[in-house]
Image 1 (cartoon, rainbow, N blue to C red):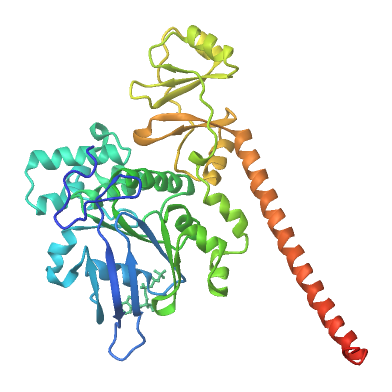
Image 2 (image 1 turned 90 degrees about the horizontal axis):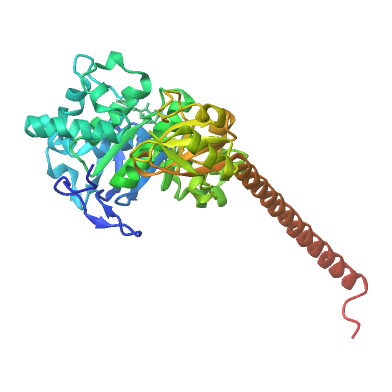
Amino acid sequence: MSTSTNHQAGAAAARSGDGRSVSGAEIVFDGVTKRYTAGGAPAVDNLSLTVPAGQIVMFVGPSGCGKTTSLKMINRLHEPTEGTITIDGEDIRSKNATELRRSVGYVIQGGSLFPHMSVKDNIGLVPGLLKWDKQKISERADELLDLVGLDPSRYRDRYPRELSGGQQQRVGVARGLAADPPVLLMDEPFGAVDPITRQRLQDELMSIQEELQKTIVCVTHDIDEAIKLGDRILILQEGAHVAQYDTPESILAAPANSFVEDFIGADSSLKQLSLMRVSDLDLASPVVATVGDNGGDAARAARAAGQDGVIVLDRQRRPAAWVNLREAEQTASLGETGRDVDVIDHRATVNDALDSMLASSHGGVLVTGRRDEFVGLLQFDTVTEHIRSVTAEARRANHDEYAITTAEDDLVETSVSDDSGDSGDGGDPQ
Ligand SMILES: Nc1ncnc2c1ncn2[C@@H]1O[C@H](COP(=O)(O)OP(=O)(O)OP(=O)(O)O)[C@@H](O)[C@H]1O
């Protein structure tokens, strides 16, 4: 699909640091308070916050701390009692609530699709309300199905009950993006699916974001998800008091207080693995074949390159099959095997890669980039080597810390005993 060409009016079409077009809009909370009952304790107490245009900000914190309330005030599902919220500099109360909600995508757990409407009609809901013509809505639905990894010809006419949980969630994301809103709000979007599907959906969201650069505010209870997806993480305490608001790297390296420390968990050095992306590691560039190539030729080329299998790509350079050499030799024209190929998105974390590899029979996993195009092979040894170096570094850092603490203790002890020595000696001899 085109990248950020048909922006909703009001979107900030700016350039990100790396030169890509940003279609998201800045969101600013200024002294926002929400009381559900007059005189009661506020669910959100004087929250001030800037969500930068084109970034993903994850809201985390204990149950009842005010995450969802804060999120729902952005699209006026809840109204603040005090304070203002602006999107792209414009007070959200300047539009009526229905109009506002058409320019702010909203995705919740399970996708919340209308059961009596087809996938296409679910996605086309907001464009329909915006009076787009039928042809344009239909093209948009196909474009978005493609973007979220569902083949339009197979899925556009299905009903939600004919989809798996993960597919329903994908359609939910497509529906949230349908009218190309500058802002997408997500409330526990991947909470209802199994861990593997969850990981895939997270990877897809990251690659969609790479392309679209929306402003995404996402509530989650999962700190690992926040570390993986967030450009910034907002950690809230009761009453939506900000415990820390920073990048995942900074929060892990320097938790602001003991509340944050407890919240991110004990093994934060291991959580560093969730920060490292597959694209940060060295990928191998194996010999590849294309669908339709002669299997014998491909096997010979692969064997000469020291590979134990033939990687077959389709015409769009997407991984189509990964067959062992003997199987390839017996195939005149390489095709898609129909079996799942072990692939992982280049934005996935090293932790995710490890999980996929453990389930793979090839000692590695194929890495894909934009539009699921093949970018390289991540080998098991590369990952274990990386984990070894991270662990060694953490150990060295702990040892340095211990050495510094011990040295400081020694220093204090020495100076204390020096002092006592001085006084014991009756002070300066002169
Ligand atoms: N509609 C409502 N009416 C009255 N009180 C509410 C309403 N919605 C939320 N609250 C209260 O406001 C506070 C914040 O709730 P909120 O749902 O924003 O928290 P949360 O951090 O999203 O929690 P969780 O992680 O459990 O979903 C809670 O004390 C909750 O009981």
